[in-house]
Image (cartoon, rainbow, N blue to C red; front, side, top):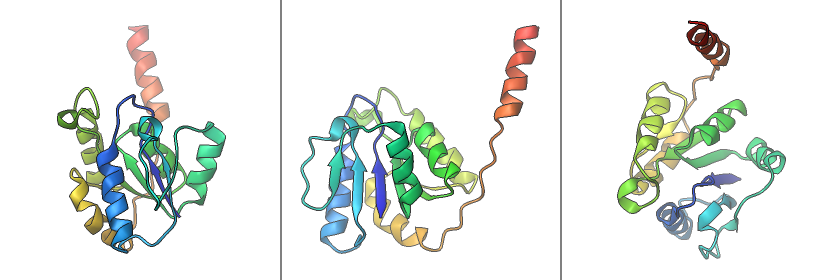
Length: 159
């Protein structure tokens, strides 16, 4: 099963859904596709199961059960996928398409991609190649530096 998550941003990300629909129609994707679409949940598809938002525990269960996570470039979605050691393809929402207020997701996706945690793409037209590449992709195991970050923040506060 492929889980697609578009996050909770109050803007649409239908360009990714359109590309997924085309890849399913062309038999590039043959797995069941479930989409957490948020504000894009009005997108109509006969090929995908689409819902808007669900409780975190149900969402985490879907992530734990999926074979592949395709996500927007949100840190929370990427980190949750990594927590469950999932193969992840991430595509940033872009300002030029009015999918976000700025292009910060481009840097997020690039950083996780460069570190070897995910396959990051900037153009939905590259999704077909990413899906083919993910089969042989072995993501680097993620180790959080949360404790280090907390100690840095405490150190700054104490100063």
